[in-house]
Structure formats: structure tokens, C-alpha cells
Image (cartoon, rainbow, N blue to C red):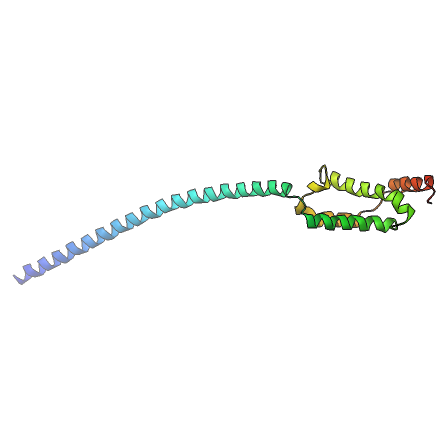
Length: 158
């Protein structure tokens, strides 16, 4: 009888153990399904993030071309151009009055050509430091120097 009772206990324990194993296996399967579902969602989110990054880059490119110099930058750039012209012609002199426009036209014209804009109002703000550096390093061409010398001679300033 005792043997039967012990066997019954063993059967109950085995049955409980088997049920526990089954529950554990089922939990593992459910966890794997949940992980697979999450992985699909993460992949979808990553694709959307990549798409949004591309869109943001495109918008930045457009804005870089459409954000122009602000009033402070224009004022500073104008000062650099004026200083560059003054480095070639002394302000207030007859030479300055007669020839400075050639230098201004040359500098502003080169900036407009370099940045492919119709007016300095449309110079891209993104390149402000580069533009100022270009003006500061700008040098008169021999042809322009000849033209200025000729104008000054014709007007009796040389």
C-alpha cells in the first residue's frame, strides 16, 4: 500500500513537472513570437527613420540655398568690400571718386558669379565666412588695374 501511495505521489509530481515544462515551453514560444513581432516593428520603424533622415537632408539642402545673408551679415560683408576697395584707393581722393566703382563692380560681380546669384541679397548665409574670406583675399586683376589707370589718366588724376 505504501508503495502504491509513493507511486501516486511520484505520478503527481511527474504530472506536475510535465505541466510545468509544458507551461515553460509555451511561455518560451509566446516570448519568441512577441520578440519576432517586436523585431518586425523595429525594422519598420528603422525604415521610417531612414526615410525621415533622407527627407530632412533634402530639406536642409533646400534651406541652405534659400537662407540668405541677414542684415547683420550684409552690413559686415559690405564693410569688408569697402575695406578692400580702400586698400587700393584712398577714400576721399579724386582717384577714389572716379575709380572705386570699378573695384566695387568687380568684387560684387565676382561674388555673384561665384555663388550663381543675381544679387548679393541672395548670397547663401551658409557660406558667409567663406564669402568674407574670399573678399579679404581678393586681388585686383592686371586687366582691371589697367582699366582703372586708363580712366584715371583720362580724367587727369594720375
